[in-house]
Image 1 (cartoon, one colour):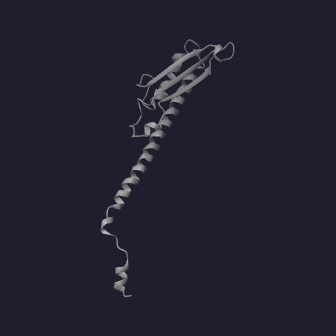
Image 2 (cartoon, rainbow, N blue to C red):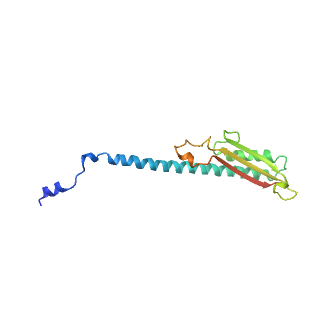
Image 3 (tube, one colour):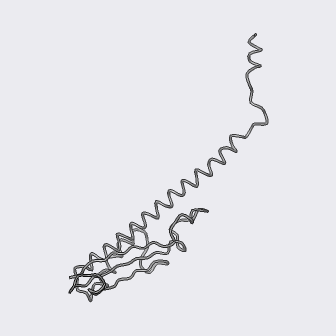
Length: 152
């Protein structure tokens, strides 16, 4: 077999297969983009949930060392800096903050009172990031953080 015959026998790319790499890349890139945006969206939502938990804990911690009458106001003031990290506050759309003094009959030790700080965010109707189609099924409708401490 001569060199010319060997070159001719090498399989050549057929002309009707041009563009298949582009089609394959288009299909694979959609899956990869959905995964990428899913990871980013879910990660940011978890970070926001941690921020809500931190805000509730800060409010409860601040309220634990004051008298029962002023505890809700002190808690409300302490919650603000933690929520500002996400450019939110208790009067933001979808956000609700409640501060309540709980009497001993609700689980606190006899002769003491507790304060509960609860922060709720309507994530379904007020998402923090643009919603990628289909990812809304995996994210929670509401995010809630509650912290309860015994007051002096």
